[in-house]
Image 1: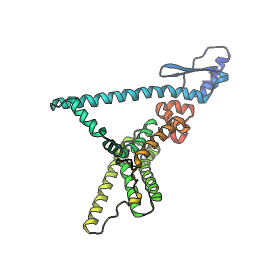
Image 2: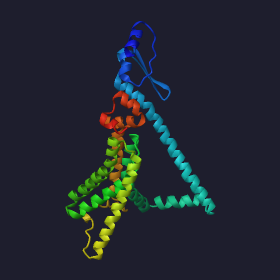
Image 3: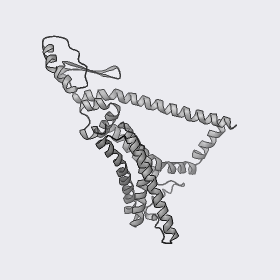
Image 4: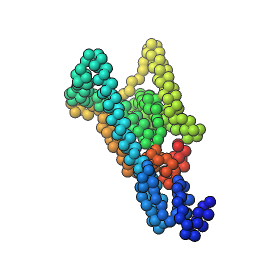
Length: 300
């Protein structure tokens, strides 16, 4: 078929070829028009055809559409939360203004309340970054809870077993938590890549296993206390120190902020981030453009 198209082109016949196969297009076309989301994204003459730029245009429109969908989803969530919350308060004969005012005052009313809110959200936002990265690749990581449990268990156990000075203990427990949580999530990744298992089901099941493991450890610790064997708590040296800013905030708040900035930079400013976003926003286009490796394509 390709040879017949080339023969027709050489004979002066106008040929319109619509295809995702870039190699086929490059072999046949004198001019390439890129269409994304129903609109023309760019035009290339034969002498100026560039695989990388074409692949980027094929994915760029999808990225903008994804940004619009994300904004729309945020608006919908806010409307639903405040709408249903207001209805529930009215049914309880409570003013929504008073109810939401008390909610925000308790979370952000004073410096200490604001700091406590930041501290409590730190442990949730770290796994949220993992969920966000997977979502940018078009995958749904529902296993953040289990990964957090296993990461916390590994960090706590290693910190209690190896008493070290703070400058060694803190990086050690942080690294242990990261590796353990990542390894737990990698199980679902392996099942998806090797056997095509749905990552939602796999991560949900892993959450259950992690929760059961936590309960077993808690019962074991309780049994040890009953036998008066004692339990080693996490040494003070392995705990993040207070920032001494006049409220109960610790280094986790700053670490969370730095991590968010780094993740955003990786996603927006690196080749890996581009490939990840392309795989999530326009997987077929990214595959045809050759912008993602075979290893990462196996996730799709």
